[in-house]
Image 1 (cartoon, helix red, strand yellow):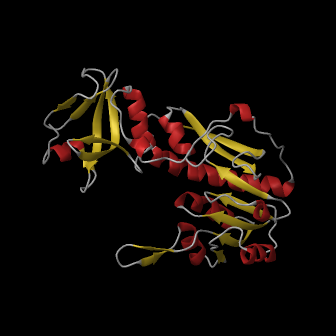
Image 2 (tube, rainbow, N blue to C red):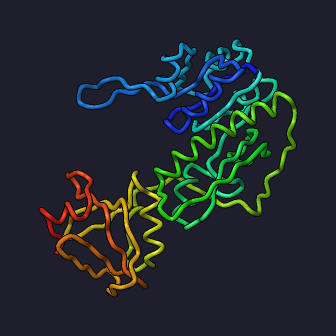
Image 3 (cartoon, rainbow, N blue to C red):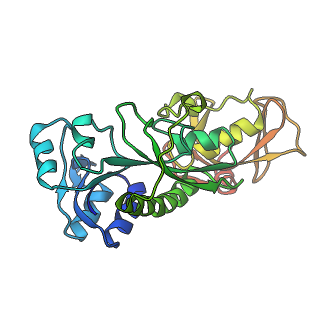
Length: 300
């Protein structure tokens, strides 16, 4: 199969790599434009472009998906299939170009968690299982017919970072399997049940603020679902503290919002139980364990 791969972040790299090292041909990759970062305005590439440069793969970086020159360049590649992993929404004029269509890898078991942040919401909601889905693109986002799915557990110690990394590898295997199925026409499409759909909207900064009037489990899952980025946080004495790791404890009873600090431990009361803060970061300082933080600082 001759493939054009669409992707931008680290999450997409394993999928591109597994296809590149398969019997299929990567005709080109499509990724986001270069950006200037930092004080020196040094130009940085997306992880997908970096991979393409290392492996001499043609790279397209359109500013707009509807650009006529970009669409013409895609047509000239004469690809059999477009594979999309962690990329922006494609217009019909793009995803209908290849003869076998275009499929997307999504980080949930669709129709659950349609939207930009499926991993975050699965963890924040306390789910014990998640997975990846490949589906053919349609006009409405994340609504196309399902080709294949793979499940994976969300362990108690998992956070956004660990699930993201495990899912990117699971997703790569599913991407290759899906391409093989499409090539051999060995698949049965499953229509999504819209009545079972749930949203996974983009994460806002406000969402990360901890409300100590909520249950310890809700707050603990918020911490896990936003760690390491953008992170849950609380405001104390006018200062912002990011929280990266927490633990629910039952042997210390505190009122909601009440703070208890020992020589090397930090606790906050929630509506039902108590949450221990394991890793945190005061604005303007480095992330560290609570033990290390309390050796030079105090919240009380």
